[in-house]
View 1 (cartoon, rainbow, N blue to C red):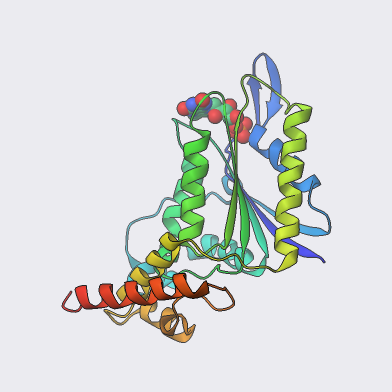
View 2: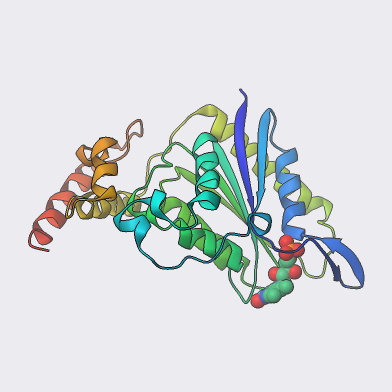
Length: 259
Ligand SMILES: Cc1cc2nc3c(=O)[nH]c(=O)nc-3n(C[C@H](O)[C@H](O)[C@H](O)COP(=O)(O)O)c2cc1C
């Protein structure tokens, strides 16, 4: 089965000296290996450094009026539309100062309304981060957590310590390819994995919060029909998770009645 994958590359580096050698983004090299493990996939690659998204201005337009009122919508929305049209995503970031790059953080800031209005429930992703020594696990955990809040059904992590390497070694290449194959197979299977209790909990939080005031959150939850559901459609919860979601919705609804 043929699938579509968007690649969001979060390294600002093009060409640089490393250990006395001229090289290019190490994280991008890992992504190339992941790609080679993915059969029958059409890729669309976006280098965040080339898009040059300006910083989020904190105007709150996306939250209260809609993402179409973001001052940077002409640069931001085409990326989001491509992510929506694709079946899966590969998001990469180098570790800078023990965390994700500012490019990826700014992308997350500009897309923060997706926490309120999750919509990527049928999509799968890989998050990959490379570091000289430390921080890749933290970076991957944060990228995964953000995508899960946006609704992503499954997110695989690949934190890599390069330890002075300019090129990925063969065993690392094999690991990347194996993960690429996994993402391809999982995406092509069309199987939607059951969410964790934590996911079901957050779903109820936004489901209730969205209905408190008129605006784009309320419209999104109502028009999509998500507001009437314990979780997104087409995803099997099983009786315990279903009951948990129902209970959480009831308890939170009562607790936030006058909020
Ligand atoms: C500005 C800057 C900050 C960095 N901060 C860290 C760091 O906190 N910890 C670390 O181990 N490596 C750090 N590194 C090294 C990069 O994480 C590492 O070389 C990474 O593989 C670069 O990926 P890239 O080539 O895809 O940009 C830093 C590199 C730069 C340029």
